[in-house]
Amino acid sequence: MSTSGDVPEDPTAALFRSFATIIFSEVGDKTFLIAAILAMRHPRLLVFAGAFGSLFLMSLLSAAMGHILPSLIPKAWTQLAAGILFLAFGCKMLMEGRAMTNSSTKIDEEMREVEEEIENDEAGVEKLSGHSIPLEHIEEGQVPSSASHAGKPANKSSFVEGTRNFCNLFLGPVFVQAFVLTFLGEWGDRSQIATIALGATHSVYLVTLGTIIGHTACTTLAVLGGRYVSTKISVKHVTLGGAILFLIFGVVYLYESFAASADELPIPVASDSITGI
Image (cartoon, rainbow, N blue to C red):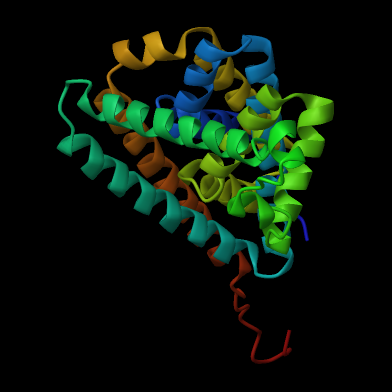
């Protein structure tokens, strides 16, 4: 089932909505700060490759998930759901923006949270690879009790550890860390849900292209000077701007939903009482 109906879709509108949604959702967000902080600790190109690869995959998955919806439910309903979703996000962002101050307190708090997550992730990787036992202790029979049980990890944990170690071997630990942290931070985020809604109401190719361009711009900005940009931009103004944009998108989708429903209603035609035509 086509998501564009009988009326040709304006590619510019779909691209702009997808691009603008990502820009206003991601600048100063958690995944933005992850790329910014990792770029200060590791080579920028590797951080960009890992973060962008994760966001590229997320864009494909989200747009594809949205593309499936019109084949399950009518297009008018998907547009109605998208309108309600964007209005809900817009109202939430509007309340968050009004509650913010012009200071950088919120961005500082998010930076501290992201730095803690990165440090915990690095500590976890070091812990997984730090089960080595000195040769002298082995010769003397001094094996710590914790090491004696190290060979019996949970199946799920051992699978995850093995997969990550395998990826580290071929892609490098920096790439894998940037990819994993970005993917986990983006999963279930506002931008992912919005991308699914966009994929349900527009061409999946245009939505994918628009979101990828948006993620490219945000990731590049984060890697090149994310921390400086995060301290200089006004998160309150970005949030309020995104709220207004989401509210406008919500109204547009509701209008399109009602217009599509009106077009699908049958129009009664009066017949001539004499001829029956």
